[in-house]
Amino acid sequence: MKFGTLADVETRGKTVLVRVDLNSPIDPSTSMILDDKRFREHVPTIQALEESRVVVLAHQSRPGKKDFTTLEAHADRLERLLGMPVTYVDDIFGRCAKEAVRKSHPGDVLLLENVRFSAEENLTMKPEDARNTHLVRKLASMADLFVNDAFGTAHRSQPTITGLPFAMRTVAGLLMEKEVKNLSRVFTSAPKPVTFVLGGTKVDDSLSVAGHVLANGTADRVAIIGVVANVFYLAMGIDIGAPSAGLIKTLGYEGEVARARAILDAYPDKVILPECVAVKQNEERREYAVAETPADCPILDMGSESIEVFSKLLRESGTVVFNGPAGMFEERDFATGTYELLHAAAKAEFSVCGGGHTAAVIEQLGLEPMYSHLSTGGGACIEFLTGKKLPALDALERSWELFGCRN
Image 1: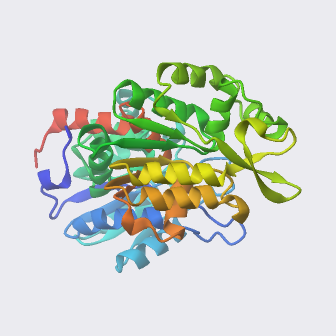
Image 2: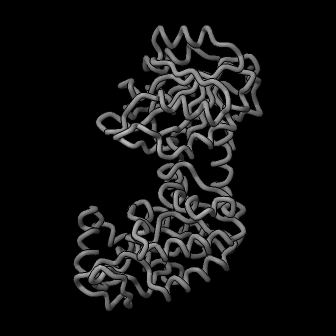
Image 3: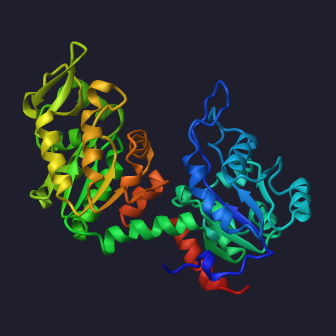
């Protein structure tokens, strides 16, 4: 890693801004936080700063969304997880926030208001421009050090992510460091053979990952499942039925069929697809060979024979990178493929999950201890796996060049 970490700087007695990602699902009727996994992942970083004045920066949702709200409940949840007081400050960089930071003492933890309440934080801009925003200049003036621990937003180029590193000395938090180390291992020292499992509905992202890891030799094979598999079937000229083809059109992925065909042409022996599928027919699960899929039935899972083939493949892999479910796992009858493949992937020597819905299912199944790494950032993880330099990581590296480890 080319950026600084907490081990490289003195934090005792310092005022430290810590950017985290507490963005979580919220019940709109009760405003209750439904899942605090992201909170839990940031606890070690905050605890490591126990001798500092900690000023936490976070966001919840974005303008226009029903769950775009204050962070008062987030402060309560963080307080319970830390086992120590967390002061919620109903301000971001105004007089109230400045005064709260000024009056704080080493060991105190403050959580400022939702940074996306500031219009500037909702803009995508170059780091040099972000550095000059009111938001960054005011926040930077309050502290001695900035710690970016928000891997979940590492693919965003917004002021608190990429502007603050250009305004002050900046290092990565423990979660950011862990994410980069584990995901980098996929490209450097992952046990062979390496199998990528790409599914779900984000077809464009999955194709980008598949193309990248096959082109550079990172993956020995790519197993395609979910809606992504349906796009590959179309690329092969297979009629998958009106409901499944219509879904691809509705999602706007018709243009991805040509990309899938190009991947198949370039790597015919490394792309593996289910040969049988499960559809909903008369409200029940029925299985067919892919080419025999009924014209009026939606494909909602892999078939049993293909589940066995894929599970064996994953158990024999040294590394499995899993991103996206095999079907509509929310319905019990069509959760088999997702559940069985996740169990098989857990047996690999090195297993990584790309976050999002898949990580949630892994937790529900009690498999989390068996996985080497569950990423906290769905979008950020995908971009990392496509070989892109994430804006937050670029800013961390460039900040280290600018400010180094001066204390």
